[in-house]
Image (cartoon, rainbow, N blue to C red; front, side):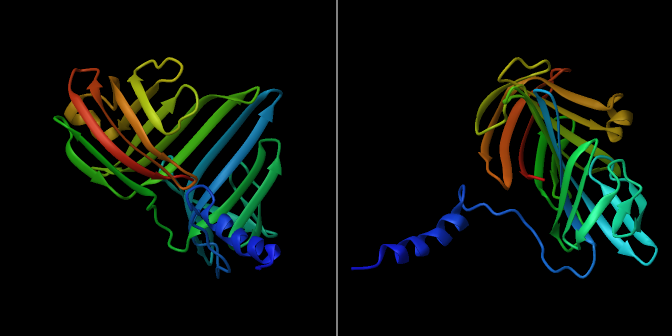
Length: 255
């Protein structure tokens, strides 16, 4: 008869590897420097209100310091290193634990950052959009941002956004759920009720051809097909405020 202890020891690695569907976030170890693609979390609380934000950015280490490109604006900024800390950021100083992890604990909250990949490029999924105005567009130069807010332990709002470059300008797609965003089907509206979502596109590249910088779905439906540790995937279709149709599908790597 096989020893039960041996069975348990054999099963544990399988359980750890499988987790929730076998999802494992990208990570690096023993990097030579800080250069790479990073994810960062900031967790803060005030009384019964808790807020979590998750972002992504790239770092390139040079002889003169660091060049950081954040996902929100895609702008590059020079930041310094002093006494094993990164300075010059709103959440500074960030302690350099090693070349793969950073951390901070201050008035803003608890921050933790980990390197996703050695290459300093945004490759966090893909996005396809189709509409009479935009045509058929495909993007793979994606970075992702997400956030959630909870009151008394219940998720009040959940957001995931991605940016890419369209006609030389930043393009943002923003999905906000009133409640928790999870696998399932949703009604899309400009002013979502509890359980609904809003979807907004924003880019300066819209200004010249369409005389506006935002496109918001006035109505429609969205389906989230995956909400794992690693991925948020789904598709949507609906009508813009000008009556034109739009559809899309997305695979966002969670920051």
